[in-house]
Length: 198
Image (cartoon, rainbow, N blue to C red; front, side, top):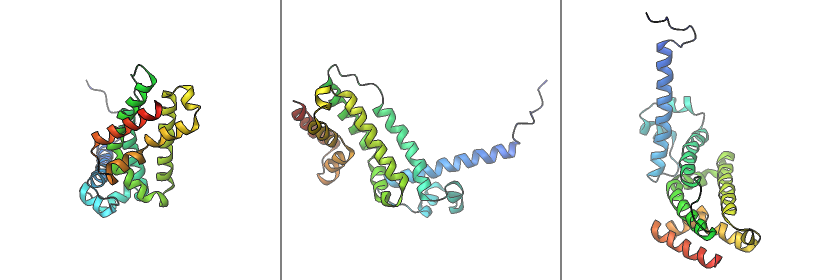
């Protein structure tokens, strides 16, 4: 004989509404990411609603403004990024580990490139987006420093040059302004870093 439902359990209708709300929220975030990945730097709420196949009111029911939607999208992107950059480095020597970092960052920067460029377009209007980019740069620098020996971290010129060469901005310049393929951009960075660290 089955037990009666607990009084703490939500009614089936309420549970269904909650599930639909979660599904709509995920569809809105996914739609925003798809539009940006397709090259639209600043999609409107109307575009997002149409792509997610929800009403405009549904977008604003879940997200008070576009900045809050960027915040949710950023959490999804950060999770993707961490899966790439956080596993322990496997290189036998510190130069090997630095070159391994370049490969991981190449993969990560290719993944986040469209979203980062969209975020950069709105940094001046959003404390969140500006802080998000700064936090990423700080975390990447800390990971680089942990891979380097004391003689390199103690050389400010060499450390700053490495941080610049391995930044998103350097990757973006090679890929967009200089028109290099991901493979060629990585080769250029590896060659520059090898010369710098000797």
